[in-house]
Image (cartoon, rainbow, N blue to C red; front, side):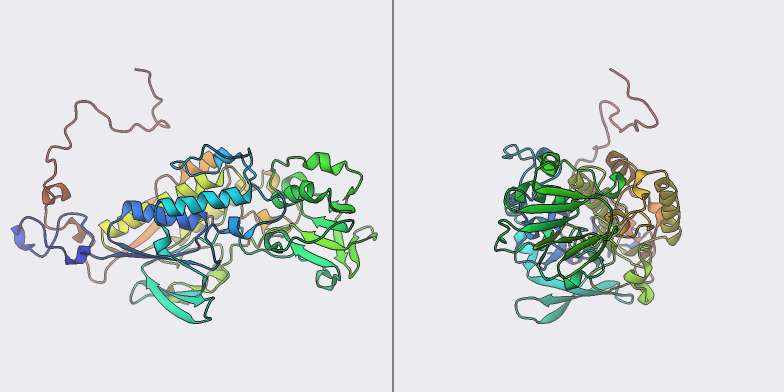
Amino acid sequence: MSSTDQQAGPSKAHGHAHLQPIFTPRRTLSVIVIGAGASGLLTAYKLQRNFDDFSLQVFEKNPEISGTWYENRYPGCACDVPSHNYTWSFEPKTDWSANYASSKEILKYFKDFSTKYGLQKYIQLRHQVVGAQWDQTKALWTVSVKNLETGDTFQSQARVLINAGGILNAWRYPAIPGIESFQGQLMHSAAWPEQEPDMTGKTVGLIGNGSSGIQILPAIKTKVGKLIIPEWSLGCRRLTPGTNYLESLSDDNVEVVFGNIAKITPAGVVVENGKEYPLDILICATGFDTSFKPRFPVEGAGGAKLEDMWKAVDKLPNYFMTLGPNCPIGNGPILASIEAEVDYMIKMMSKMQKENLKSFEVNSDAVRDFNQWKDEWMKESIWVEPCRSWYTAGSPSGKVLALWPGSALHYLEAIRDPRWEDWTFKTEDGANRFSYLGNGHSFVEANQGDLSYYIRDHDDSPIDPVLKKPTKE
């Protein structure tokens, strides 16, 4: 039985017989989640844990769950933080086989997580979201979905839309002149061929020495005849542990080329001093489109298009995304950040349900003020070096979008509690904002609970350690 079918509270006093106890939801919470990677799976778990009356659809374009850990299978692909830091805080794994777990082992972790909590029932595989539009009248998102098995497209609606597609999903080749003319084998680390390419005795170029590049090099160096890689500056890439990477640079068949790549020819790569390096294979470990622009049209209130507004996200009611702009992708363990983000969303949706709100939307002045503060902070950081960095969406002079202006713990504290003043909430048309107060009875009274729950034998109310230093008892 849904909450809309339940009868009113225990009293008919004051003429409110049609009302229910305080905070009683009057409708099902309907949610659509885009993506069944780590973020999508956690969102499904948290919704299932925190709500009874909800409906959830998770659309995943791949034939399997786990997102980037399903898609990335290049040689040496592994976690770039210690394995024990790459689990949910409540779901530890004590038997990792290596300090930096392989992609296959991480894939299994997320599959096991999904199975343990029965999340598969919410997920539709091989279903790709191709568009989303906010219906102002109905206060619903209309999402267009393509069934990749049949080619058919259909629409589904929900009150809340959560984009959990992730940042490391839309891989791309670098914007280097002539790359399309290369006559050898061109590969990207995020789209590695299922059939392992034969590199025996061949000259291989490796562009990129971020997380993927430093894992690929040690894995292929013994196979190739010669390996050529470019140099990058410190602030241009995420600092990651490269097991056997530095040792590999000193091997006789590995050459580090200094300077930028000027162009790519049918035969190889030309650097800025004019020297050409002939190649049989060119591997681009150059990452993803980190502009945060959606890979499908998202149209909010008044026809506002997300790709035109980005990164400002006002005018998008009831819309969330995980790992959005300036989340701490490179500041620390990413799963802890995802947990904090999803917990934030749960608090927002809980308020929406308990107060029977129609919509919530971030205030434009909050977006403006945060961007201003963030940009000033970034000016003093190493991340503003003039290079083609994925932190700046590949622009040498672009703003830093893929890092948080502070530490990972700073981020967790910053979003622990929603700042309600940064949001605009709307009630159902014509509804009083205090209608959630109901018939004057509490939830405990309506459910025959403990009527003296507020009585304690000591003061256990939380104390903010920022304002009051803990004392030893």
